Every structure is written in structure tokens, then in C-alpha cells.
Image 1 (cartoon, rainbow, N blue to C red):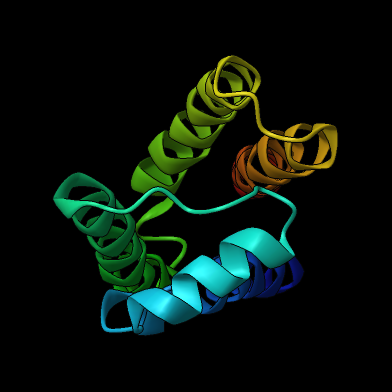
Image 2: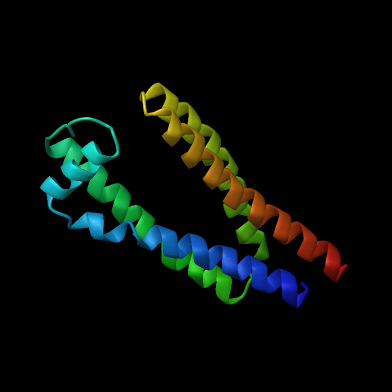
Length: 138
């Protein structure tokens, strides 16, 4: 793997890990704050109840738990290249499903055009960088 590809791949993994870490505060965020953010995003009043509490907090926790994994992959991208490729493909599959879920859930158009494409972009970035790096080492 060329040093330039290694650095770019590591940076991409660290950027995504950092973004995912931003979800951690929501694990313990007061529900009133979550409701205010929900309304500020134009999603109307936030439904309340145990399931909503569980889903919002557990999803934030999962994002926060994935972040250190991505950052660990960034430490040695040459060694973890096969796993990084899997992560890239999972991003593409997940992005496709997110677009369908976002549409079916009635989320605003801006959400649809932002979430799925960003996740897909990270996936394409990971796949392209691992592909280019493999070609440069053969």
C-alpha cells in the first residue's frame, strides 16, 4: 500500500469514527433535549415512551461503540485491508437500506438526500482506497 493511500484511508476511518463518537452524548441526554432537537429538525413533536427512549439511546450507543473499531482499523490499514473492504461493502448495503427506510418512515426530503449518500460515500471511499492500494502493491 502506498503511503499516500494509507494516510487517506486512515484519515477516512478516523473522520467517520469521530463523527460516530458525536452520538455518544445522546445515550445520557435528557429527553427534553432530544425532543427539542427533534422539533428543531422539523420532525414535529417527538413521540414519548419506553421504546422511543430505548431506540434513540441504544442506537447512539451502537454508533459510539463502532467508532473505536474504525479508529483501530486506521492504525494499520494494510493489515486490516480485507476487513476495511467488508466495512466498505456494508456501508453501501446499509446506505441503500437507509434510503428505503427514510422514505418509508416519512422523513423530510433533506434527510433522504443527506443520510444515505453520505454513508454510501464513506463506503465508496473505503472500497476505492483499498482497491487502489492493492493495485499499487502488486
